[in-house]
Structures are given as C-alpha cells and as structure tokens.
Length: 147
Image 1 (cartoon, rainbow, N blue to C red):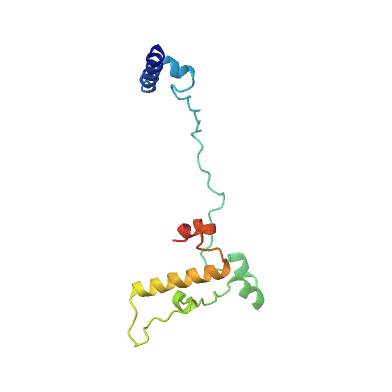
Image 2 (image 1 turned 90 degrees about the horizontal axis):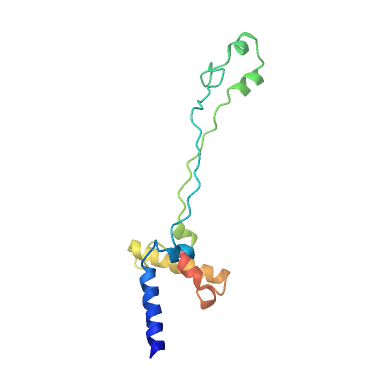
C-alpha cells in the first residue's frame, strides 16, 4: 500500500512541477528560461554615394564628340540600332495539347468543369504512362502533391 502512495505522490509532484515554468528543478534540467538571444549590431551613418558623372545623354542621341567627326554609315548604324519588332506570343491551349475537344459530340460547348475533369484524367493518364507506379501505393506522395 505504501508503494502505491509513493508512486501516486511522485506522479502528483511531477504533474505539479510540469505546470511551473520557473521552478528550480526545471531550471536544473534545462526546461526553465530560454537562453538569451545574440544581439545583432547594425552600423548607422553610412551615406549613399552618387557616381561622379551624372551627365548622361538622352536615349537615342549621339554624343557631341561623335557628331562632330564624320562617321562611316556602319558606325552610325551600330550606335543607334533599331529595335526589332516583337511578335506577341499566342496563349498556349492546354486542352489541345492533351487532345481534349472543347465541344461535345452533338456540337454543344462543354462546361468549364467538364473540361477541367477531362484535363485531370488526361494528365493522370500521361503521368501513368511515364511512371507505371503513379497513383499506386508505391507512389502515393505524388498524388497529393500534384493536386
């Protein structure tokens, strides 16, 4: 009977001490106050320096030294090249990439939800072709990471 009382007394003492964050016993075993954090010193007073020459020419103009000397046509062309026209990139059609038609066999348009469901099935099918274990218990983590 005495053993039961001593074990329950130790359990009660342990329970009481677990609620005290500043007890000497917890400090002894490293469970007390956290270690002080190192301080970071920041230096102040450094000013920003400007470059020495701020006499920049406007874009597309020739400097005065180059304008006063006669230049060959090839040199003039290299100073001010004309920008090449950039063609706009058409948006990529993901449904066409996976071979999904946007219309039903009767000619009516598919809803967004139907297209997304078919796309998800097509993506899963392509991943299973690349990795036969895709979607099985052996490759379970990729199912949740791929969405």
